[in-house]
Image (cartoon, rainbow, N blue to C red; front, side):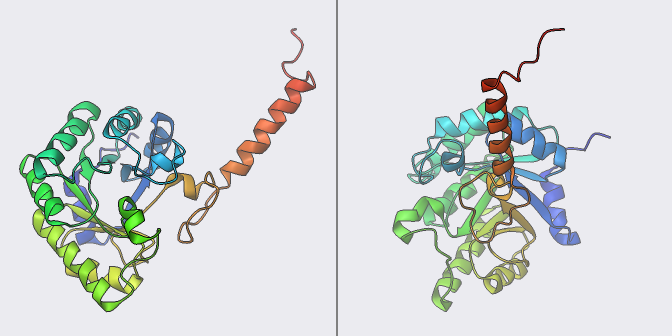
Amino acid sequence: MARRPVTLPQLQQKKQHGDPITMLTAWDYLWARLLDAAGVDVILVGDSLGMVALGYSTTLPVTLEQMIHHARAVRRGVTASFVVCDLPFLSYHESPEQALRSAGQLVKEAEVQAVKMEGASPVVCAATQRLVEAGIPVLGHVGLLPQRVHQLGGLRQQGKTEQAAEAILADAIALAQAGAFALILEHIPSELAQRITAKLEIPTIGIGAGPHCDGQVLVTADVLGLTPQAPPFAPVYADLGTQAIAALQQYCHDVRSRIYPPPQP
């Protein structure tokens, strides 16, 4: 039986009912189709594709045009999952108007159902409110912000001091008040994620933030063993990288040994 499309109200109801939200990343049609068939609630076209699919060392070089290109491919592979797309670095930081133009392009050209922005600066909070007023759902993101990797000195856990924890909690509240439909809590202490989740009426989705969030998100390539080194909080559910290399080596062996293709009948 075909799965019914996931809607924003359904995601928000999951928090009320205590049903965890599942989220994974996709960067093309192939993986989007597989994630959709697996029953993933939300597919995130994350700017992590810059590292996973494009070979960059950070997410910073990814452009809005690249995100639109990949989001289009993902959208073509989805029939039921709710699709969210990252706004890349410097595509929303100047003003709410810039954010609206960038998000509008993603919604119109790639037909994504929501966008995600990092942080809770005054510009981001104002942009969140502006997008929501225009009918574009916004997924917030607090804690570790990969687009600020140079400012943070690396992809380190955030919110470890009381002052830092209070700042992240304030950011989460500000984004909820601005109209975000849910929040990503990335790489923060479990106790802080629990406080934020209890404080907010909107769902929280953790990545390296412990078990108390309303859902979890991971980079698909990490959990399938397709990256050189997954973060410590990402379990490897299948080592597809090793299996793929072995299969491709076997193919090369068979061709070189003239085992493949077999003789014509």
